[in-house]
Image (cartoon, rainbow, N blue to C red; front, side, top):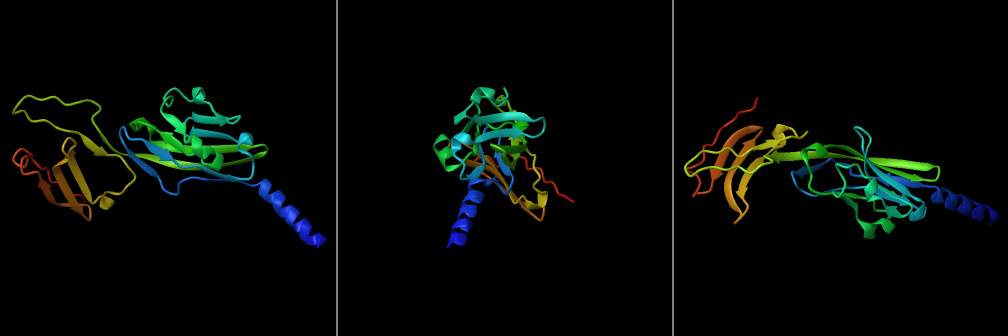
Length: 208
C-alpha cells in the first residue's frame, strides 16, 4: 500500500513537471491580405501565470508576440508585426497560445517558433507559413478597349503537379472569369464566363 502511494506521488510529480508544446504538423498557406492562425498548444499542469510564451520568427530572431506575467505584451512585438498579431485571449487558460496573424504580407513567409518557458523547463514548436498566392499590390487602371494584365503568381513549396485548378473570379457578383484545369502538370482545358470569353486571351503553358 505504501509502495502504491509512493508510485502515485512520483507520477504526480512527473506530471507537474511536464511541459509539452505542440504546433501544426503541416505548413500553413495564406493569400495576400488574409488572416491566418499559427497553432501552439501547451499541455502542462503548470499554472498559466508561471508560463512565458514567445512567438519568434526564426530567420533573424524577430519577436512576433510575447506572453509574460499572465498578460500579452503587444508593445514588445517587432514593428513589422505590431497591431497585426494577437492571442485568442479566451483560449489561453486552456493552454492555447495559437497566434493570429492579420493581413498576411509576402514578407511574412517563413518559419515561426512558439517558445515556452516555465521555471527551469522549456519546450517549443515550429510552424511554417507559406504565402501561396500573390498578386499586384496596386490597383490596375485602364481605358475602354485597352488590354490589361492582372498579376497572379504562385510562390510555394507545392509541386506544380499538385496544382489541379486555377480560378479567376470577379468578387462583386462572384462571377467566374476564367478557370484553367491541369492534369499531371499540363494544361488541358479552360473555360470562361460567356460575357468575357471573347475578351480573354488564354495562354497555354506546357510543363516539362
